[in-house]
Length: 534
Image 1 (tube, rainbow, N blue to C red):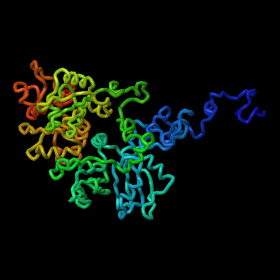
Image 2: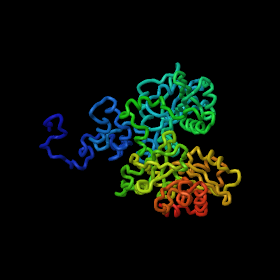
Image 3: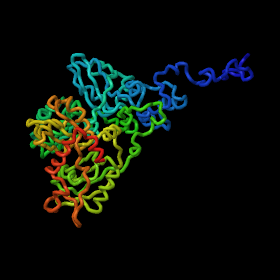
Image 4: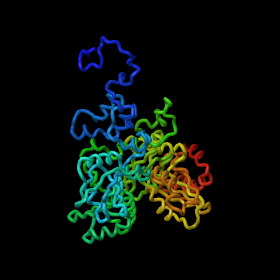
Protein backbone atom coordinates (compact mmCIF):
# COMPACT_ATOMS: atom_id res chain seq x y z
CA UNK A 1 0.00 0.00 0.00
CA UNK A 2 1.29 3.42 -0.91
CA UNK A 3 2.16 5.76 1.95
CA UNK A 4 0.09 8.86 2.49
CA UNK A 5 3.19 11.03 2.37
CA UNK A 6 6.94 10.61 2.10
CA UNK A 7 7.60 11.77 5.64
CA UNK A 8 5.46 9.02 7.14
CA UNK A 9 7.16 5.72 7.96
CA UNK A 10 3.97 3.65 7.47
CA UNK A 11 0.37 4.29 6.55
CA UNK A 12 -1.90 5.10 9.46
CA UNK A 13 -4.67 2.92 8.02
CA UNK A 14 -2.46 -0.12 7.74
CA UNK A 15 -2.37 -2.36 10.79
CA UNK A 16 1.22 -2.96 11.92
CA UNK A 17 2.40 -6.56 11.92
CA UNK A 18 4.24 -6.08 15.23
CA UNK A 19 4.07 -3.78 18.18
CA UNK A 20 5.88 -0.46 18.00
CA UNK A 21 7.35 -1.24 21.38
CA UNK A 22 9.10 -4.37 20.15
CA UNK A 23 11.48 -2.55 17.82
CA UNK A 24 14.16 -0.28 19.18
CA UNK A 25 14.11 1.88 16.03
CA UNK A 26 10.34 2.32 16.24
CA UNK A 27 10.66 3.54 19.82
CA UNK A 28 13.38 6.04 18.90
CA UNK A 29 12.75 7.11 15.35
CA UNK A 30 15.61 9.58 15.24
CA UNK A 31 18.08 7.15 16.80
CA UNK A 32 20.88 6.16 14.38
CA UNK A 33 21.67 2.49 13.99
CA UNK A 34 25.12 2.93 15.43
CA UNK A 35 23.68 4.50 18.55
CA UNK A 36 23.58 1.18 20.39
CA UNK A 37 27.29 0.67 19.77
CA UNK A 38 28.31 4.25 20.53
CA UNK A 39 31.18 4.02 23.04
CA UNK A 40 30.55 7.57 24.25
CA UNK A 41 26.98 6.96 25.42
CA UNK A 42 26.83 8.02 29.04
CA UNK A 43 23.07 8.21 29.49
CA UNK A 44 22.21 11.13 31.69
CA UNK A 45 25.92 11.80 32.23
CA UNK A 46 26.53 12.67 28.58
CA UNK A 47 25.84 16.32 28.98
CA UNK A 48 27.55 16.43 32.37
CA UNK A 49 30.77 15.05 30.91
CA UNK A 50 30.72 17.69 28.22
CA UNK A 51 29.99 20.46 30.69
CA UNK A 52 33.65 20.80 31.65
CA UNK A 53 34.41 22.70 28.46
CA UNK A 54 32.29 25.73 29.41
CA UNK A 55 30.44 26.12 26.10
CA UNK A 56 33.28 27.45 23.94
CA UNK A 57 31.19 28.03 20.80
CA UNK A 58 28.59 30.22 22.44
CA UNK A 59 31.16 32.26 24.31
CA UNK A 60 33.56 32.83 21.42
CA UNK A 61 30.98 33.79 18.83
CA UNK A 62 28.49 35.51 21.19
CA UNK A 63 25.60 33.30 20.12
CA UNK A 64 22.60 32.67 22.29
CA UNK A 65 22.66 28.89 22.05
CA UNK A 66 24.74 26.47 24.04
CA UNK A 67 27.14 23.81 22.80
CA UNK A 68 25.64 22.04 19.74
CA UNK A 69 26.82 18.59 20.85
CA UNK A 70 25.29 19.09 24.27
CA UNK A 71 22.00 20.22 22.65
CA UNK A 72 21.86 17.16 20.40
CA UNK A 73 22.71 14.87 23.30
CA UNK A 74 19.86 16.35 25.29
CA UNK A 75 17.42 16.06 22.34
CA UNK A 76 18.20 12.45 21.57
CA UNK A 77 18.54 11.14 25.07
CA UNK A 78 22.30 10.90 25.20
CA UNK A 79 22.75 8.67 22.11
CA UNK A 80 24.01 11.41 19.84
CA UNK A 81 27.74 10.90 19.13
CA UNK A 82 29.67 13.23 21.40
CA UNK A 83 32.70 15.25 20.42
CA UNK A 84 35.97 13.85 21.70
CA UNK A 85 36.04 14.05 25.48
CA UNK A 86 39.45 13.35 27.01
CA UNK A 87 37.96 12.74 30.44
CA UNK A 88 35.69 9.98 29.15
CA UNK A 89 38.25 8.26 26.94
CA UNK A 90 41.02 8.48 29.49
CA UNK A 91 39.10 6.83 32.28
CA UNK A 92 36.85 4.28 30.63
CA UNK A 93 33.66 6.27 30.41
CA UNK A 94 33.09 8.13 33.66
CA UNK A 95 33.84 11.82 33.85
CA UNK A 96 33.79 11.78 37.63
CA UNK A 97 36.35 8.95 37.90
CA UNK A 98 38.59 9.48 34.86
CA UNK A 99 42.14 10.68 35.01
CA UNK A 100 42.33 13.89 32.97
CA UNK A 101 44.12 14.00 29.63
CA UNK A 102 46.28 17.08 29.96
CA UNK A 103 49.34 16.10 27.90
CA UNK A 104 49.86 16.73 24.18
CA UNK A 105 52.33 14.60 22.21
CA UNK A 106 54.57 16.60 19.85
CA UNK A 107 56.29 14.46 17.22
CA UNK A 108 59.25 15.43 14.99
CA UNK A 109 60.64 17.67 17.74
CA UNK A 110 64.40 17.43 17.23
CA UNK A 111 66.97 18.19 19.98
CA UNK A 112 68.18 21.23 18.04
CA UNK A 113 64.79 22.93 18.30
CA UNK A 114 64.10 25.64 20.85
CA UNK A 115 61.07 24.93 23.10
CA UNK A 116 60.12 28.61 22.77
CA UNK A 117 59.44 28.06 19.06
CA UNK A 118 56.61 25.71 20.07
CA UNK A 119 55.39 27.49 23.19
CA UNK A 120 54.93 30.78 21.33
CA UNK A 121 52.12 29.05 19.40
CA UNK A 122 50.32 28.06 22.63
CA UNK A 123 47.58 30.47 23.73
CA UNK A 124 44.85 28.30 25.27
CA UNK A 125 45.83 28.05 28.94
CA UNK A 126 48.42 27.67 31.66
CA UNK A 127 51.24 25.24 30.91
CA UNK A 128 52.23 22.80 33.64
CA UNK A 129 55.38 21.48 31.95
CA UNK A 130 57.20 21.06 28.64
CA UNK A 131 59.32 17.91 28.52
CA UNK A 132 61.57 16.86 25.64
CA UNK A 133 62.77 13.35 24.76
CA UNK A 134 65.80 13.75 22.51
CA UNK A 135 66.28 10.01 21.91
CA UNK A 136 62.76 9.73 20.46
CA UNK A 137 62.64 13.14 18.74
CA UNK A 138 59.46 14.14 20.52
CA UNK A 139 58.18 16.31 23.34
CA UNK A 140 55.21 16.42 25.69
CA UNK A 141 53.28 19.59 26.46
CA UNK A 142 51.24 19.29 29.66
CA UNK A 143 48.59 21.87 30.52
CA UNK A 144 47.21 22.70 33.93
CA UNK A 145 43.64 21.90 32.90
CA UNK A 146 42.28 19.34 30.42
CA UNK A 147 40.09 21.94 28.68
CA UNK A 148 43.16 23.93 27.60
CA UNK A 149 44.71 20.77 26.13
CA UNK A 150 41.48 20.01 24.28
CA UNK A 151 41.33 23.51 22.79
CA UNK A 152 44.96 23.32 21.69
CA UNK A 153 44.38 19.90 20.11
CA UNK A 154 41.31 21.08 18.21
CA UNK A 155 43.07 24.25 17.06
CA UNK A 156 45.80 22.28 15.27
CA UNK A 157 43.44 19.73 13.78
CA UNK A 158 42.63 22.28 11.10
CA UNK A 159 46.06 23.85 10.68
CA UNK A 160 49.67 22.72 10.83
CA UNK A 161 52.17 23.50 13.56
CA UNK A 162 55.37 24.47 11.74
CA UNK A 163 58.68 25.05 13.53
CA UNK A 164 61.29 26.24 11.07
CA UNK A 165 60.66 23.97 8.11
CA UNK A 166 59.49 20.98 10.18
CA UNK A 167 55.87 20.04 10.72
CA UNK A 168 55.20 19.02 14.32
CA UNK A 169 52.82 16.09 14.71
CA UNK A 170 50.06 16.54 17.28
CA UNK A 171 48.61 13.73 19.38
CA UNK A 172 47.48 12.82 22.88
CA UNK A 173 49.80 11.78 25.69
CA UNK A 174 49.00 9.50 28.59
CA UNK A 175 46.60 10.56 31.37
CA UNK A 176 48.40 12.17 34.30
CA UNK A 177 47.21 13.24 37.73
CA UNK A 178 48.41 16.51 39.16
CA UNK A 179 50.02 16.19 42.61
CA UNK A 180 47.91 17.82 45.33
CA UNK A 181 50.82 20.01 46.42
CA UNK A 182 51.25 21.48 42.95
CA UNK A 183 47.53 22.02 42.59
CA UNK A 184 47.55 23.96 45.84
CA UNK A 185 50.49 26.05 44.63
CA UNK A 186 48.66 26.88 41.39
CA UNK A 187 45.54 27.85 43.30
CA UNK A 188 47.73 30.22 45.31
CA UNK A 189 48.93 31.87 42.08
CA UNK A 190 51.96 29.83 40.99
CA UNK A 191 52.86 29.78 37.29
CA UNK A 192 55.99 28.83 35.37
CA UNK A 193 56.81 32.55 34.97
CA UNK A 194 58.88 34.24 37.69
CA UNK A 195 58.71 38.03 38.02
CA UNK A 196 61.83 39.87 39.22
CA UNK A 197 61.55 43.54 40.23
CA UNK A 198 63.78 46.34 41.54
CA UNK A 199 66.69 45.19 39.41
CA UNK A 200 69.91 47.18 39.09
CA UNK A 201 72.19 48.04 36.17
CA UNK A 202 74.38 45.09 37.10
CA UNK A 203 71.53 42.67 36.40
CA UNK A 204 71.57 41.45 32.79
CA UNK A 205 69.83 38.59 31.05
CA UNK A 206 73.04 36.56 31.30
CA UNK A 207 73.51 37.12 35.04
CA UNK A 208 69.84 36.44 35.75
CA UNK A 209 69.89 33.21 33.75
CA UNK A 210 73.05 32.09 35.54
CA UNK A 211 71.45 32.79 38.93
CA UNK A 212 68.20 30.89 38.31
CA UNK A 213 69.28 28.10 35.94
CA UNK A 214 70.02 25.80 38.88
CA UNK A 215 66.30 25.52 39.65
CA UNK A 216 65.26 24.00 36.33
CA UNK A 217 65.20 24.33 32.54
CA UNK A 218 64.38 27.79 31.20
CA UNK A 219 62.35 28.74 28.14
CA UNK A 220 63.41 32.39 28.00
CA UNK A 221 64.58 35.37 30.07
CA UNK A 222 63.04 38.72 29.17
CA UNK A 223 64.57 41.88 30.67
CA UNK A 224 62.77 45.24 30.51
CA UNK A 225 65.57 47.68 31.23
CA UNK A 226 63.38 50.81 31.24
CA UNK A 227 61.33 49.35 34.12
CA UNK A 228 64.15 47.41 35.80
CA UNK A 229 62.11 44.23 35.81
CA UNK A 230 62.53 40.81 34.25
CA UNK A 231 60.47 37.72 33.53
CA UNK A 232 61.92 34.21 33.64
CA UNK A 233 59.78 31.58 31.94
CA UNK A 234 60.72 28.10 33.14
CA UNK A 235 59.66 24.95 31.30
CA UNK A 236 57.63 23.72 34.28
CA UNK A 237 55.82 25.12 37.29
CA UNK A 238 57.82 22.98 39.73
CA UNK A 239 61.05 24.76 38.76
CA UNK A 240 59.43 28.19 39.09
CA UNK A 241 58.15 27.28 42.56
CA UNK A 242 61.64 26.26 43.66
CA UNK A 243 63.04 29.52 42.28
CA UNK A 244 60.53 31.75 44.07
CA UNK A 245 60.99 29.88 47.36
CA UNK A 246 64.79 29.99 47.18
CA UNK A 247 65.18 33.61 46.07
CA UNK A 248 62.76 34.84 48.72
CA UNK A 249 65.11 33.43 51.38
CA UNK A 250 68.33 34.54 49.65
CA UNK A 251 70.07 37.55 51.20
CA UNK A 252 71.29 38.69 47.78
CA UNK A 253 67.67 39.11 46.63
CA UNK A 254 66.15 40.56 49.81
CA UNK A 255 65.94 44.08 48.31
CA UNK A 256 64.35 42.83 45.09
CA UNK A 257 60.84 41.70 44.33
CA UNK A 258 60.31 38.04 43.52
CA UNK A 259 56.87 36.77 42.59
CA UNK A 260 54.94 34.87 39.92
CA UNK A 261 54.13 36.49 36.58
CA UNK A 262 51.57 35.68 33.91
CA UNK A 263 52.17 32.72 31.62
CA UNK A 264 52.23 33.99 28.03
CA UNK A 265 50.57 30.74 26.94
CA UNK A 266 47.36 31.76 28.73
CA UNK A 267 46.81 35.07 26.95
CA UNK A 268 43.78 33.87 24.96
CA UNK A 269 42.29 32.25 28.07
CA UNK A 270 42.40 35.65 29.80
CA UNK A 271 40.97 37.43 26.76
CA UNK A 272 38.05 34.97 26.42
CA UNK A 273 37.46 33.70 29.97
CA UNK A 274 34.01 32.31 29.19
CA UNK A 275 35.36 30.31 26.27
CA UNK A 276 38.47 28.89 27.87
CA UNK A 277 37.32 28.88 31.47
CA UNK A 278 39.15 29.55 34.71
CA UNK A 279 42.17 27.26 35.15
CA UNK A 280 40.33 25.40 37.89
CA UNK A 281 36.74 25.80 36.69
CA UNK A 282 36.49 22.08 35.94
CA UNK A 283 38.65 20.72 38.76
CA UNK A 284 35.70 19.17 40.64
CA UNK A 285 35.22 16.92 37.59
CA UNK A 286 38.85 16.19 36.88
CA UNK A 287 40.11 15.66 40.41
CA UNK A 288 37.15 14.03 42.16
CA UNK A 289 38.45 10.96 44.00
CA UNK A 290 37.05 7.54 43.28
CA UNK A 291 34.65 6.66 46.09
CA UNK A 292 33.98 3.00 46.70
CA UNK A 293 30.19 3.12 46.33
CA UNK A 294 27.78 1.12 44.22
CA UNK A 295 26.81 3.14 41.12
CA UNK A 296 23.52 1.25 40.89
CA UNK A 297 22.59 2.27 44.41
CA UNK A 298 20.05 5.15 44.37
CA UNK A 299 22.11 6.93 47.01
CA UNK A 300 25.27 6.82 44.88
CA UNK A 301 24.85 10.40 43.66
CA UNK A 302 24.22 11.75 47.14
CA UNK A 303 26.88 14.04 48.45
CA UNK A 304 29.24 12.20 50.75
CA UNK A 305 29.80 15.38 52.73
CA UNK A 306 26.47 17.24 52.79
CA UNK A 307 27.98 20.15 54.74
CA UNK A 308 30.19 20.90 51.73
CA UNK A 309 27.37 21.16 49.18
CA UNK A 310 27.75 24.93 48.83
CA UNK A 311 30.51 27.45 49.59
CA UNK A 312 30.46 28.30 53.28
CA UNK A 313 31.89 31.10 55.39
CA UNK A 314 34.98 29.33 56.69
CA UNK A 315 37.67 31.95 55.92
CA UNK A 316 38.61 34.80 58.25
CA UNK A 317 40.49 37.95 57.30
CA UNK A 318 43.18 39.24 59.65
CA UNK A 319 44.34 42.82 59.13
CA UNK A 320 46.56 45.37 60.89
CA UNK A 321 49.13 42.66 61.62
CA UNK A 322 52.43 43.74 63.15
CA UNK A 323 55.18 44.08 60.50
CA UNK A 324 57.49 41.75 62.44
CA UNK A 325 54.83 39.08 62.95
CA UNK A 326 55.21 35.71 61.27
CA UNK A 327 52.82 32.99 60.22
CA UNK A 328 53.90 31.10 63.34
CA UNK A 329 52.75 34.01 65.51
CA UNK A 330 49.31 33.86 63.92
CA UNK A 331 48.97 30.13 64.49
CA UNK A 332 50.05 30.56 68.11
CA UNK A 333 46.98 32.66 68.93
CA UNK A 334 44.37 30.78 66.86
CA UNK A 335 42.48 28.08 68.75
CA UNK A 336 39.24 26.18 68.53
CA UNK A 337 39.51 24.01 65.40
CA UNK A 338 41.58 22.50 62.62
CA UNK A 339 42.97 24.76 59.91
CA UNK A 340 42.66 23.94 56.23
CA UNK A 341 45.14 26.62 55.20
CA UNK A 342 46.63 29.95 56.21
CA UNK A 343 47.82 32.53 53.68
CA UNK A 344 49.95 35.35 55.04
CA UNK A 345 50.95 38.45 53.06
CA UNK A 346 53.56 40.26 55.21
CA UNK A 347 54.03 43.11 52.73
CA UNK A 348 50.31 43.94 53.07
CA UNK A 349 50.10 43.04 56.79
CA UNK A 350 47.09 40.80 56.17
CA UNK A 351 46.31 37.09 56.34
CA UNK A 352 43.48 34.73 55.40
CA UNK A 353 42.81 31.75 57.66
CA UNK A 354 40.55 28.97 56.36
CA UNK A 355 39.08 26.43 58.80
CA UNK A 356 37.82 22.96 58.03
CA UNK A 357 34.56 23.59 59.88
CA UNK A 358 32.52 26.78 59.25
CA UNK A 359 31.31 26.63 62.86
CA UNK A 360 34.91 26.99 64.03
CA UNK A 361 35.31 30.10 61.90
CA UNK A 362 32.17 31.55 63.49
CA UNK A 363 33.51 30.78 66.98
CA UNK A 364 36.88 32.40 66.25
CA UNK A 365 35.16 35.45 64.74
CA UNK A 366 33.00 35.79 67.84
CA UNK A 367 36.08 35.49 70.04
CA UNK A 368 37.79 38.22 68.02
CA UNK A 369 34.76 40.50 68.40
CA UNK A 370 34.46 40.00 72.15
CA UNK A 371 38.03 39.38 73.34
CA UNK A 372 40.26 40.29 70.42
CA UNK A 373 43.61 39.08 69.13
CA UNK A 374 46.86 40.87 69.97
CA UNK A 375 49.94 39.98 67.92
CA UNK A 376 53.22 41.47 69.16
CA UNK A 377 51.41 44.23 71.02
CA UNK A 378 49.12 45.23 68.13
CA UNK A 379 45.45 44.31 68.02
CA UNK A 380 44.49 42.65 64.75
CA UNK A 381 41.33 43.41 62.80
CA UNK A 382 39.27 40.31 62.05
CA UNK A 383 36.60 40.05 59.37
CA UNK A 384 35.13 37.57 56.91
CA UNK A 385 36.78 36.35 53.75
CA UNK A 386 35.12 34.86 50.70
CA UNK A 387 32.97 31.72 51.05
CA UNK A 388 34.78 28.58 49.96
CA UNK A 389 34.55 24.80 49.71
CA UNK A 390 36.98 22.11 50.80
CA UNK A 391 38.16 19.76 48.00
CA UNK A 392 36.56 16.32 48.20
CA UNK A 393 39.85 14.43 48.50
CA UNK A 394 40.88 16.66 51.41
CA UNK A 395 37.61 15.89 53.20
CA UNK A 396 38.19 12.17 52.68
CA UNK A 397 41.69 12.47 54.15
CA UNK A 398 40.38 14.68 56.96
CA UNK A 399 37.87 12.03 58.02
CA UNK A 400 40.76 9.55 58.04
CA UNK A 401 42.77 11.70 60.45
CA UNK A 402 44.62 14.14 58.20
CA UNK A 403 45.85 17.47 59.57
CA UNK A 404 48.36 20.06 58.39
CA UNK A 405 50.91 18.65 60.88
CA UNK A 406 53.20 15.79 59.81
CA UNK A 407 54.78 13.52 62.44
CA UNK A 408 58.19 11.95 61.76
CA UNK A 409 59.23 9.20 64.16
CA UNK A 410 62.53 7.36 64.55
CA UNK A 411 64.80 10.21 63.44
CA UNK A 412 68.46 10.54 64.44
CA UNK A 413 70.94 13.40 64.78
CA UNK A 414 71.39 13.88 61.04
CA UNK A 415 67.83 15.25 60.76
CA UNK A 416 68.08 18.89 61.76
CA UNK A 417 65.31 21.46 61.59
CA UNK A 418 66.94 23.06 58.56
CA UNK A 419 67.22 19.72 56.76
CA UNK A 420 63.59 18.85 57.45
CA UNK A 421 62.44 22.24 56.22
CA UNK A 422 64.52 21.92 53.05
CA UNK A 423 63.50 18.34 52.26
CA UNK A 424 59.78 18.82 52.92
CA UNK A 425 59.43 22.25 51.31
CA UNK A 426 58.91 20.50 47.96
CA UNK A 427 55.40 19.60 49.12
CA UNK A 428 54.39 23.13 50.14
CA UNK A 429 55.09 26.09 52.39
CA UNK A 430 56.06 25.22 55.96
CA UNK A 431 54.89 27.20 58.98
CA UNK A 432 56.90 25.58 61.80
CA UNK A 433 59.35 22.70 62.38
CA UNK A 434 59.59 21.23 65.89
CA UNK A 435 62.29 18.75 66.96
CA UNK A 436 61.86 16.46 69.98
CA UNK A 437 65.32 14.93 70.21
CA UNK A 438 64.65 13.19 73.52
CA UNK A 439 61.89 11.20 71.82
CA UNK A 440 63.58 10.94 68.41
CA UNK A 441 60.70 12.56 66.57
CA UNK A 442 59.82 15.77 64.77
CA UNK A 443 56.74 17.67 63.67
CA UNK A 444 56.46 19.68 60.48
CA UNK A 445 53.51 22.09 60.37
CA UNK A 446 52.53 23.08 56.83
CA UNK A 447 50.52 26.15 55.92
CA UNK A 448 47.97 24.01 54.07
CA UNK A 449 46.54 20.57 54.72
CA UNK A 450 46.97 19.53 51.08
CA UNK A 451 50.73 19.91 51.48
CA UNK A 452 50.70 17.65 54.54
CA UNK A 453 48.65 15.05 52.67
CA UNK A 454 51.13 15.10 49.80
CA UNK A 455 54.06 14.78 52.23
CA UNK A 456 52.59 11.79 54.06
CA UNK A 457 51.83 10.05 50.78
CA UNK A 458 55.00 10.87 48.86
CA UNK A 459 57.91 11.57 51.23
CA UNK A 460 59.14 7.98 51.45
CA UNK A 461 58.91 7.58 47.68
CA UNK A 462 60.72 10.81 46.85
CA UNK A 463 63.54 10.58 49.42
CA UNK A 464 65.18 7.29 50.45
CA UNK A 465 66.48 8.83 53.70
CA UNK A 466 62.93 8.81 55.06
CA UNK A 467 62.07 5.26 53.99
CA UNK A 468 62.56 3.77 57.48
CA UNK A 469 60.87 6.55 59.43
CA UNK A 470 57.37 6.51 60.86
CA UNK A 471 55.35 9.14 59.01
CA UNK A 472 51.87 10.05 60.12
CA UNK A 473 49.69 13.03 60.95
CA UNK A 474 50.27 14.97 64.14
CA UNK A 475 47.93 17.19 66.10
CA UNK A 476 47.24 20.69 64.84
CA UNK A 477 47.87 22.99 67.81
CA UNK A 478 45.22 25.36 66.45
CA UNK A 479 42.61 22.71 67.34
CA UNK A 480 43.40 23.03 71.07
CA UNK A 481 40.55 24.50 73.14
CA UNK A 482 40.54 28.12 74.20
CA UNK A 483 42.20 28.97 77.48
CA UNK A 484 40.09 30.74 80.08
CA UNK A 485 41.44 34.30 80.26
CA UNK A 486 41.29 36.58 83.24
CA UNK A 487 38.89 39.47 83.02
CA UNK A 488 40.21 42.31 80.91
CA UNK A 489 42.88 40.21 79.19
CA UNK A 490 43.10 39.66 75.44
CA UNK A 491 44.57 36.77 73.48
CA UNK A 492 48.16 37.65 72.69
CA UNK A 493 51.50 36.07 71.92
CA UNK A 494 53.39 39.04 73.41
CA UNK A 495 54.77 38.02 76.83
CA UNK A 496 55.11 41.65 77.91
CA UNK A 497 51.45 42.35 77.21
CA UNK A 498 50.17 39.49 79.41
CA UNK A 499 52.92 38.49 81.77
CA UNK A 500 50.88 36.08 83.87
CA UNK A 501 48.87 34.34 81.20
CA UNK A 502 51.01 34.68 78.08
CA UNK A 503 52.60 31.25 78.39
CA UNK A 504 49.35 29.56 79.27
CA UNK A 505 47.05 31.23 76.79
CA UNK A 506 49.32 31.13 73.76
CA UNK A 507 51.80 28.48 72.80
CA UNK A 508 55.19 29.82 71.84
CA UNK A 509 57.38 27.49 69.76
CA UNK A 510 58.65 25.60 72.82
CA UNK A 511 55.10 25.11 74.11
CA UNK A 512 54.04 23.91 70.68
CA UNK A 513 56.87 21.41 70.90
CA UNK A 514 55.54 20.18 74.22
CA UNK A 515 52.09 19.62 72.74
CA UNK A 516 53.58 17.88 69.74
CA UNK A 517 55.70 15.69 72.03
CA UNK A 518 52.57 14.43 73.71
CA UNK A 519 51.14 13.75 70.29
CA UNK A 520 54.25 11.78 69.32
CA UNK A 521 53.42 9.12 71.89
CA UNK A 522 50.13 8.51 70.14
CA UNK A 523 51.18 9.05 66.54
CA UNK A 524 50.57 5.45 65.53
CA UNK A 525 46.97 5.74 66.70
CA UNK A 526 46.56 9.20 65.26
CA UNK A 527 43.09 8.72 63.81
CA UNK A 528 41.47 8.47 67.22
CA UNK A 529 43.40 11.48 68.49
CA UNK A 530 42.28 13.66 65.57
CA UNK A 531 38.75 12.38 65.90
CA UNK A 532 38.69 13.62 69.46
CA UNK A 533 40.08 16.98 68.36
CA UNK A 534 37.41 17.34 65.78
